[in-house]
View: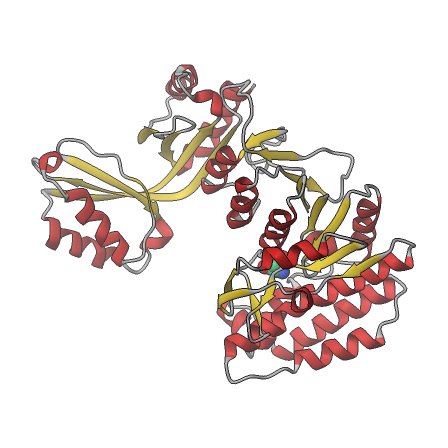
Length: 449
Ligand code: ASP
């Protein structure tokens, strides 16, 4: 049994949906398919999910993003999108459009409850029409709606978590005809719709793959897989064919963004491989993410995280003051700032953060640090990039670290700091933002070619 998930760009219009249906039909092991709502395409600058959020929040959603899109415009965009898809696929549109228009008017005094229901309609109706189209082309398919088979969730309306008993209900959809499941939402015990966090169709499909003990979880998107380096910076960057959950986690958390992590965790628990593939190039094999692999090479990919800053502190005997680091990190916690690294020594420490998180609070943060920890000196260094070579083959292998330092030294690129992760599966080099693309190119050439 293969569980396949198609993201918003893969189901953004009739042309894409036709590609999806060909993919589904080309392998009979594809037994459960999870779909997103229509995403952006050349004709639509916004995702249907965003329009739905805009409708259900009385325009607040786009106002917050400083976009001038009214509720009326969003309603028109949603109805037109589904109408065009249904027309282009040659499906009868009256029933779906009537029902959709009624759902868009759903009101509840609890704004989150209303938002969850209205926003879920993108996935809901897309799954229904995709199943209809498959049947029209001769492939028997049924829609399996979360509200019908019992995809139970709990928690917040807009950030739900799955209930364990759902796994039993998921098993029921594994038998019989091909099932098309709308991703992104479930229902609570009162039958009310609740959404996962954004990008949550990945999560629905991950839980379904787990519940069915799928042989593989295919995640179809609009990229060829996971690139060894950012292809916007290095055009000849290649796709990594196989990498472990650990490696993708290190690559992703440092700037690669391909997948919802919670979804990955459920597959990891059951050792279900995840195959990231491109709907527009089904002949390509993409990237397979697995629990374990033989480390045949040192480095598999290099990530770059821009826009970093560090807060640097000096204080005599800091290294011997038990609890100093804990007290410092506590202050960052109070400001809800995620800390990335904190290299420390006898009389100094630096804390690396995303500099966007310092906007509007750096003065207060500095003052609190001064009051609580009374450093002898404090400075903030802005505009850094952290470059992170990743690979299982880095364990007990210092050559790539030496190579990295050498190549940067040969090109006079100053290293702001260097730090090996305790797992030894990656190391981090911080350089100034202005030379970071050049540094990435050099490291790519030296470590991956
Ligand atoms: N449509 C939802 C979103 O845009 C969920 C998903 O596509 O995974 O976040």
